Image 1 (cartoon, rainbow, N blue to C red):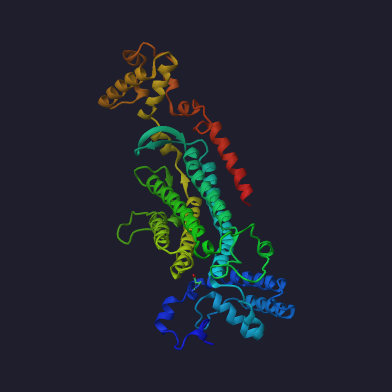
Image 2: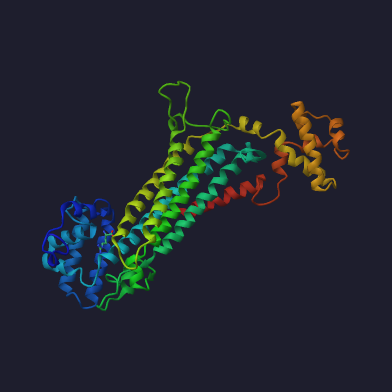
Length: 455
Ligand code: ARG
C-alpha cells in the first residue's frame, strides 16, 4: 500500500502533483504533537472497547519508539500523520493498522496544531519577557536622565528617558497577554469530530481532553474540520507584535542617529559601510522593521485563504502551517535581535537632557500663569507671543530677564526662573501614567513584578 487511500484508486498519484500536495517538508514540525494525539486516541479506542488491550499496548509501545527515534526524513510521506502511522506499522505491524479507526486527518491536524501552539506560545511569551527585561535594564542605566517627548516628530514636552523606555514595555506586555488569549482559544479538543460528522465509536472525548491537557471539547464537528480561527488569532498577535518591534526599532534607529544621539549603539550591534568609513548602521533594527511587513503579510494572506472556503475541510487549510511557522520563527528571531541591540545601548544623558530644554517648556509657562488665576486659553495666547518673540530673537525662556517676562504679563514673578526648567516640568506631573519620577518608578517596579511572574 503506497498511499493512505490506495484501495480506491487504480492509478498511482502523479508524482509532481503528489509533491505539490505534500506537507511533510514543513508539518514534520508537528511530529511530537501527532504522536501524543495518536497515543491519546489509541487509549480512548481501547477504553471504548474498539481496540483490544493487547493491540492498545502494542500501539502505545510502538508510538513511544517512534517518538524516541525522532522525526526522520520520511519515505515519500504525504504529511506528518502519514509518516507517524507508517513508522508505527513498520514497528508493530497489524495493530498499527487499527489506530486510525474512527479518526480523520482533518481532526488530527487540528489537534496537532492546537497542541503545538500550547507548547510554543509560552516560548514566545518568554522571549517577549526577555526583551522587556532589557528595556527595564536600559531604564535603570538611564537613571534620571531626561529627553524630549515628541508628537508629530516635533519636540513636545520633557520626559524621563525611563518613561520613554516604558512606553515600549507596555505594548510588549500587551502582546504577551494577547498570546494568553490565543492559548485559551487553542485550548479546545477537536477529536471526536471524525472527518466532518463525528465518530460512531463511543469515544470518551472528555478523557482524551484531560489526558492531553485541553480544558474544553469542541461542540460542532463540521466547524472543527474547517476552523483555523486560532491560527488567525496567533497570526494577528504575531503581526501586531512585529508592528510593536518595528516601531521600537524605528525609535532607536532615529534616537541613535547623529541628529539625535540620545543613545549609542554598541559596535557589536551595528554594521559598517563598505565604502564610507564613518558609518555605523543599525541594520538589525532595520531588518526587524522590514520583517514586520512579512508577518503582516502572513496574517492578511491567511485571512484571504480562509475567506471563500465552503464548510468542512478543504485542502486550502494546509496553507495555515507555513504562515504560522514562519510568523513564529520571524517573531522569535526579531525579539531576540531586539533584546541584543537593547543590551548594548548606552544612554547619552547629557545630549538627551540638553535636547529636553528650551521652548518645549512652553506648556509649563502656561501652567505657571494658570496657577496665578489666568484662564488657560488666555495663558496659551500670552505664552504663544513669548515664544514668537524668542524665536525671532533666537533666544530661549531661560535667557529672559524678569523685566522681559513682565512685558508679557505682570503675573510673572522672581520664581519663574526656577519654575521653568525641564526637571521642574517632570516633577510637577501628578497622574499615575505621567512622567513624574514617582509614577515612573512605580511603573518600573510593577513591571519588575510582572517579569517575576513570567518566570
Ligand atoms: N496535511 C493536511 C493539512 O495540513 C492534513 C489534513 C489532510 N486531510 C485531507 N482530507 N486531505 O491540512
